[in-house]
Amino acid sequence: MHLSISGFFVNDSNNHSIQYELDIPQHSEHAVLEVMNWKSFAESPDGEFALSLAQVQKIEQVLQRPMPRELALYIGIEA
Image (tube, rainbow, N blue to C red; front, side, top):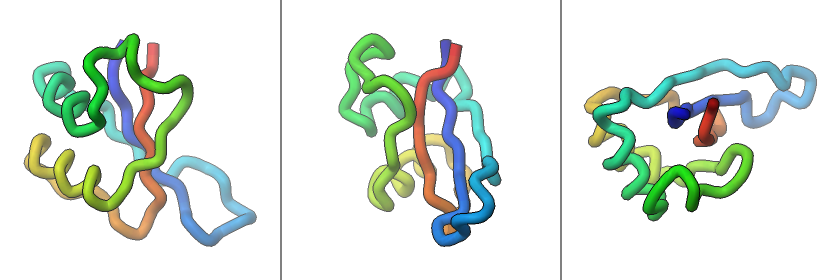
C-alpha cells in the first residue's frame, strides 16, 4: 500500500478525468500521514480525502516539490 495524491479540474463538469497524480515516496509517507493527522494507513478514511490549502502547503514542504494549485487535490491509499 502507498499514499497517492490526485488532482481534478475544479470547475469543468464535463471533464472528470484525473489531471495530476503523485505517488508519495515511501520515505516520506510517515511525515505525510502526520500532516493528515493519521497515525497509520489503517486509521485513514476510506476512499480519497480532499486536501485543504494548508495541507497542500505542508505536504509540499515535506516532499520539497510544488503541486498544482489550480486543481482540486485529493489524497488516498492505493494497494
